[in-house]
Length: 250
Image 1 (cartoon, rainbow, N blue to C red):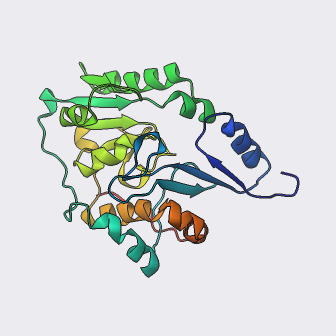
Image 2: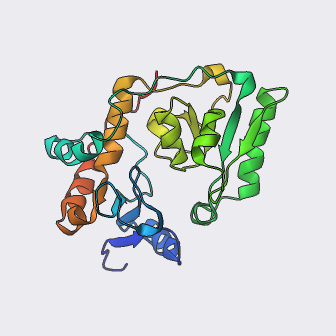
């Protein structure tokens, strides 16, 4: 760290959080690899659709929590993902509020350790806001190792409350509003944890903002081939400064 070499880590397990803390303390650049925002695979297996492992990469943060401007090369590179996706941007759902619930997705142990979050405090804060807003709030918790299929929980949810889980991405894709912490990749299309929990006041992204956001995420994930060729390093360094307006939800 004395020579200010950049650090590269994969995930926040096995003590890598201590490296990141040191980087932040000494203002050393760090590059953080994690599971892909989309088209990830369990146990670091190659993705069945694309035949390679795919990882997200962020510089000096864990998740891309702002909108970025991408160029033509980025557009061409992520076209392989876009071809597999629904061409229509999601529209906010019209679920019956009284028959569905707030789905609360607490941060994992690793996330709590890195950000020094007290999980009991985080959960109690969310509960308090819900009880301060509603006489009898209906909510359910989904933890990292839940055996319930994600599709089932999201089908029964009208809103997702999360720290930074990728569950937020899947929720937005289904038209479900998201409330999140400020380090979440859903910040540009979600609602602040410090804002109102009133359901009819929650915002949802316009179609233009949705595609700007989803393309930005896809442009910040890379196949192993793209990582080896240096494409990931060039793109992340460039897009770190290619920020767009954060007036993101309508």
